[in-house]
Amino acid sequence: MNVIVNGKHYKHITTKITRKATIEYSENTGTNIDGSMSLDPMGTRLGYTLTFDSFTKDQNSLTQLWNDLIRPRQNGILITMPYNDSEISFYAKVNDVSQGYATTYKNERIWDKITVSFESTTLNIGV
Image 1 (cartoon, rainbow, N blue to C red):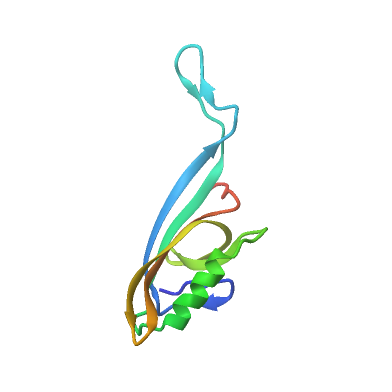
Image 2 (tube, rainbow, N blue to C red):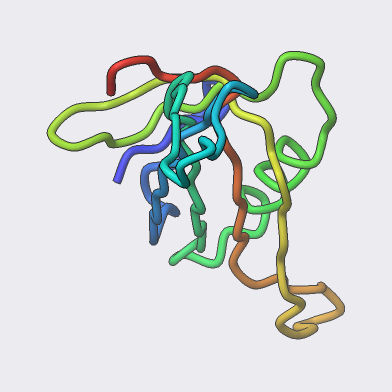
């Protein structure tokens, strides 16, 4: 799987992609007096959870990715990833990043896979 984060390819360490879609509605959405609902959809926000793991145990790649993901940004982080039969690129708000401590080997700390969840900063209209 080819995933690009801020222009850097992570093809060989992307191990899992989970996606979700949330339809967002305006404040005009609500329940009518007869109990029926009036919907005013604004668009669909895409959300993803990615898991990265270095099969070669290249700690430098995981450390670089970790440092890139946890840096705050005003406009989000640019992500390119698989989407159906093609690819999609968008700016994303990082919601959380986690990484487990694995072990210490020859006085070097070895960290486990990285899991990150994020959502698009813009709504997709007419997805």
